[in-house]
Length: 243
Image (cartoon, rainbow, N blue to C red; front, side, top):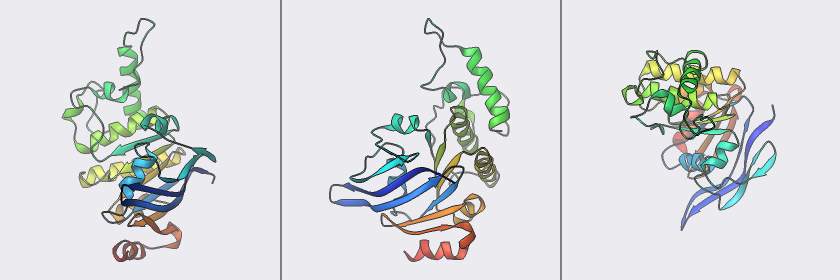
């Protein structure tokens, strides 16, 4: 398995506060990595750095073995990385179709929206790429969806635009048990299609269901990096609690 994304000795400071210190880890192609740790461990800073929101104070990232600098979200998106936050960046007053194509709308030579084409593509994505329970129309307003359905729309957007890495930041914290299972199953389905995921979560049991490898952080540093085959839930829990 080749490494798709790598962090090399990353440090990030905000004034006198050091949020990340000498952090290195990698994400392989078609791999699901669990990024674990308690509050203040540095998980969100890591996600924001990979997403292009923050730039490292020291160290660098590489994509496909090439040194890369993300200066904004679009740089990260151009590299095939999509971030799905707990509170997804969707617009409640717009339809599922408009949310999927937001910022990447299809237009004709006169600059007019190709509404029918976008709607057809959205319907195909919802039916085949990402099944969203209870949704049968791409015209449904996102504001009428549940938390789990909104997460699925965000994943559908990433799938359609052929993203290579999904960063899922605490995606299950506001979901029901059924919605959580649907999301975790979607992560496994994407893995089968060679899409990599980084699952950032407090819930070790959810991570253990789907992750191939675990990176545990504490106070901005990596304290444990292990394959699923070489660890247990109890050991992971100890590292999170004791560090």
